[in-house]
Length: 124
Image (cartoon, rainbow, N blue to C red; front, side, top):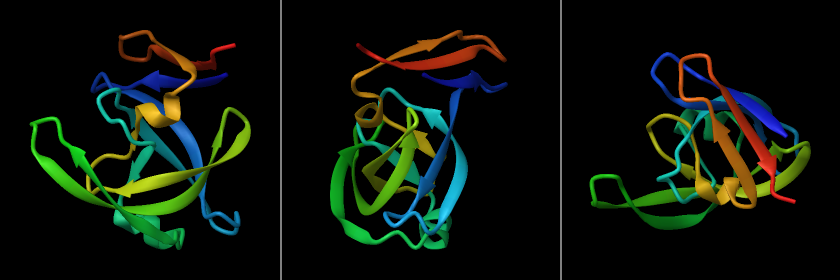
């Protein structure tokens, strides 16, 4: 089980450890849970560069306004539910996001008030 909190902007937040595939470089990040984002996570270019994440290709996605965008994709490792998980990361110069691909197979519960608890628990 993982826990987060709802911030003052009414965003459900979760703290993650993100690193390169060799786990040489790591960084703790706070990310917004975005159920409209189908990817795994998105990170700013400065974090991707600092972690020296290897480029893995490009991906296309549809944004909230219906427009399409191309994203650079990088390879990373996150600690998710106590285990290392290799995932693709989309470069996006927006807030750090956790998407539905990372949440897949988990139950998400949010107390939608400032300071509310965010609970992510594996579906058994």
